Length: 272
Length: 287
Image (cartoon, rainbow over the protein chains, first blue to last red):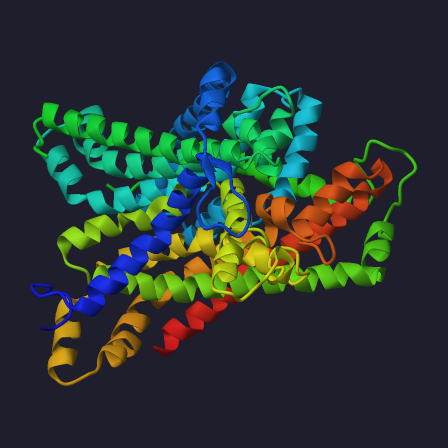
């Protein structure tokens, strides 16, 4: 059988697929085992004693943990919303506009994700200190946005390219005004791009440690800041458990977004 | 409906503040500080003193070389692994391909936690070390090769490969969805081997995704802070950590040196971006 048609699947392919799953699932398995480890002397493959101590501590500390997660969620969501707000019209202009040097403008606008962040964020921190934005929630949101908006821009540009101009022009010819065109044609078709761009921006902000640490100082500290001391400590079960939580939270959130978007489409009568 | 020139420019305005006021201003402050200005101390090196002082020292060049090697090698290994895996996943039938979404796990894991995983897996008392002991290869943790603090950046490189391979699978996988399946089938029917199909049809098709992910990842690894901060060695050191320590840990008078180092990092990145863009353009012209 030619490859890709896949009616019959060879043993070799199943084996390599299983190897792949193992490769990516094994670290998660290791984290689960580590989080439940009581006494785990080298060179045992599995712990000698199992213990739920880390889980007990997590329940005990649920208040500070939840507070740090809440802070992370709030600045990540704000950075995502702000990115969307500032990228919407530039993405349209880059795709449909008649800019003479589109490539140069695009390269400049993408620069914050290409140039290593440490080269310009220490300077931004200096500026924020003067402006009183350091150690403030707003400063954290600004610096996260300045670093991650290009992912939103890219996604929205792809979205505008996918819409094509035909449906917008037809709507205009049929008498739809600017707002109706935007609201009934562009926004619904742009939604997948907003979701994918938003997911990346959110993820980048949510998992960031360095920028939040730099600008937030001790005053604004999210979940990554809560986790960090555990990663360098000798309490491996606790570090493993908090890492698992770091994996679970975005997954949960993305599932939630997927369900919400699907429902939104159905309500607008666009099928599934 | 295409916008006019002014309509396009007005629509770009929302990005002026983040790009001009934050990104460009931040970069400018760094460059200016490297010449001794804008530093909250009167008696610091001025002019090109910081540059002279910094680069007269031999160890900084060792760190520059170290950072470049770690960045380029980890990106190259990730691209090679990720491309092969993406093709493997692409050829899986439906249900299996859905299951293969587990490859996205490292995309969600923050860099910090990947560094922690590297300690658990590759550390001298880690999982691989224990497995090696079980097989009778090593008798004590110290016998296991010191991957994390070898002085060759192996631990940092491994952590980047763990994190970035998934990104390559994502980028290359998206490109593979646009591959004409007919090409592959006809090549196979005409007797091309699987390897020939991969080399002569798949690779040329996904090359743009490979090049851009290589660029993005080598730049990222060159300047990223979190992984080398947690598991990096100190001599030679990744430049981002050196710069950070010079900027904050030492007395303020060394800040111009940190800024000079960061400016240098900016220049290397710009050269890398420029080089890749030129190389891709030349290749596409010849193709």
